Length: 245
Ligand code: NAD
Image (tube, rainbow, N blue to C red; front, side):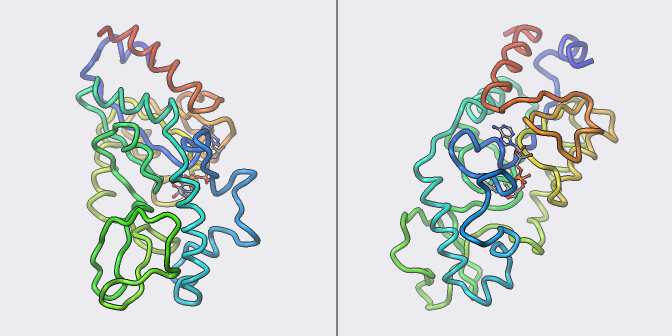
């Protein structure tokens, strides 16, 4: 089915990609639900919340500072690089990510729909002003805005709404695409987990790339059980041989 679409639609095929923490695992960034996904004795669900930040902003920022240090040392892997190449090659290509690490942009992806924000931005809790902040490690924990108020990471925490405009664009891409790749996500965090379902409802071919079974697995058209950095580049080579350059 996939080959048939590629043969027929060639370069004009509409492709959407949804990535999650698993795509960055081979870059050395721990996932939330993987084996090394824990931080000290806290679970992400207990730290990445507005309540945790209100209770103990220094603890939450220590966790983010630790994550920022890991991300600062990491580099995009072949999966990130392949997606940047796909964007260059395919005119109808949308990349949607749940990740906050910025590795897609580091790999060269220019248009990235970031559903959950970006760890390299901070937001003043009083004025709402968003700025880039790449200080690693942070000199002051918790960091403060010039106005004296606390800064928070410009990411979406559990229980917070996603940016509406980004979410709308993501669902539009899912509803219009002919092929969707779902890479490295456990497909349990809503509303991102509904994006592949929207593509399936519209009759798209949905391929899951993940070494493990997920709640989405029974519904997808095809699964590739393997690491993103290994399976995606070989899949893309096969696509190119069908589409032609
Ligand atoms: P998750 O941690 O819940 O699940 C990770 C998934 O990736 C699992 O299904 C796992 O089997 C799979 N995986 C592990 N190694 C892989 C590999 N090499 N190739 C392909 N897949 C692999 O992640 P989630 O579904 O993205 O949800 C967690 C939330 O936390 C999201 O918002 C996520 O973006 C965020 N988060 C982001 C980062 C990051 O920015 N790098 C890291 C951790 C968590």
